[in-house]
Length: 227
Image (tube, rainbow, N blue to C red; front, side):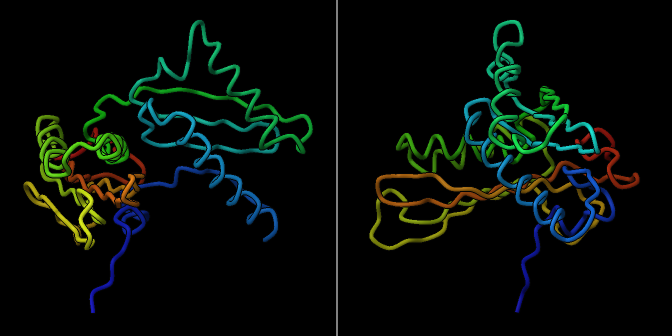
């Protein structure tokens, strides 16, 4: 029987690094940090769904927490004169860090250079189109074309559920190029999510092969150093 492994976790020791960086004292603090990181990710991705969030990076130390948002449209997050970032910082302090005294919270916003090579952003666009009742085959083909034009070596997109309101749920997949899932040097960006429709939930999955990375863990993970 085949075993499915998350492509990023599979390559964590070779070419990728974790989005969260911190040290915990004891099991309880570790569990609290993991739960807080998960809730932070969920909150930010739901709040800035239209901005096209690629990833959320969280760096902690004893006196400071730095949250970095990588987005396709940073203007929607920053706002006029940086007012959006300051409002977001105060909201996060009140919602997630109210019990921590004398903590310095920083929020940074970075623009994603090539959003069509980000599986999370491609997935969000696909989910939005499906929720607008766009035919799923058109959504799959348009996603493949956007990723191809961006320079990807391979891409696979998949949707599953009651497609176009059918009585029986099924899965539809489109593939372009190559997708070496067993190669640890392969820069495979993977994301999965859902689209809420009147017929029920439609599952969406995206794999993007951006090349091979010949560097230590963490370097070039955004796609700069590859052949």
